[in-house]
Image 1 (spheres, one colour):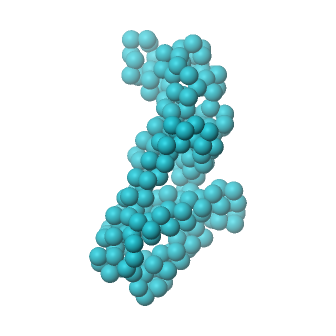
Image 2: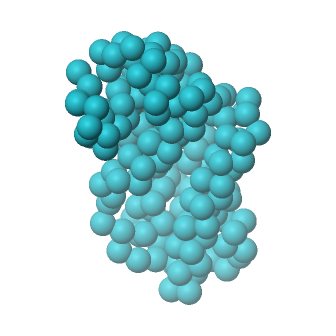
Image 3: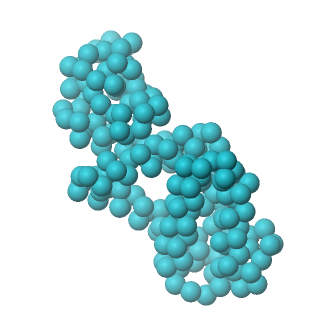
Length: 202
């Protein structure tokens, strides 16, 4: 149940948790004021104190998803090619938690595509991810672990590869278990290395 009215921040956390539970269960397609209110055990009128419109609710949900994704534990990255590998593996649905998060992300794409502002926000999120990956690739190139080439192009290719792998793993989990996803990432990285051996030595 919602907390007392005077505790605004605690109530906002309650609302955010209810939003997340609806997203985890139903994706963005099932994210409505009514669904969040039911999850919260409150009236839709209460939610209008936080979200005046459905778009405000969706924008909050996207921000919440981004914060939860950033807060998720990451692999020990090291440096060079190992750091690139860790960054790519952190994106994939290799655990139950990461699978749930990725399901929500993928369900958000259709919602974002339908709204120019949300689409631009999503584009910026993926651009930031590419920029971070570009920095890691450039460092691996300086260490001689990735062959020379435009790091921005390589980052774009790696991001496109791993997001495509996310979709395949979500749609056909039996065909893409965690072990196969990891092997495919290693194959992709091996093609970028000077000797073709990859982050795990081939």
